[in-house]
Image 1 (tube, rainbow, N blue to C red):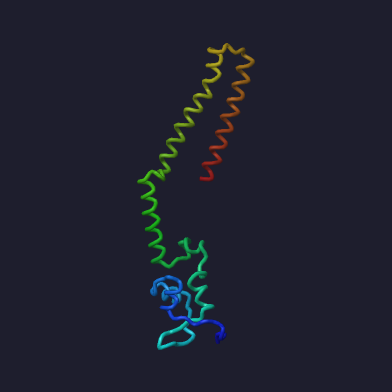
Image 2 (image 1 turned 135 degrees about the vertical axis):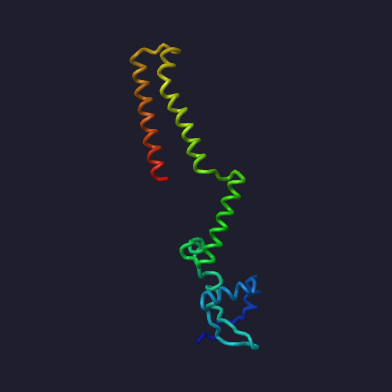
Length: 159
């Protein structure tokens, strides 16, 4: 039994109050299994305290985008929409293929490693560094290469 302070609204009134389509209101009430509390002028009316949560607070945002919690048709529609969004972003160059990223990263790392490996030779020829300084440079370069290797290995493992 509802309290006399709680208003009773028809589907048309709710649609008008909340600027929603009548079909949307009906669908959400049906999904949340909200039952009419009576009739007014021959139309079902619903308790306002049940209507609000059914129309606006019934699903959390995370549930709306969790395909595992969707009905099969909604899940299919969601995946189709996601595929279309990804294809659009790919066409607009807002997204790139994983293989392109791997290839580019491989090229960058090869250039960087080659520069690191040839740095001591350049310093010896162009700057006439003594052997002790060249050894220090080689040690620093080796440490940088090792660090880069471990960071890339860790990043790719988490990928």
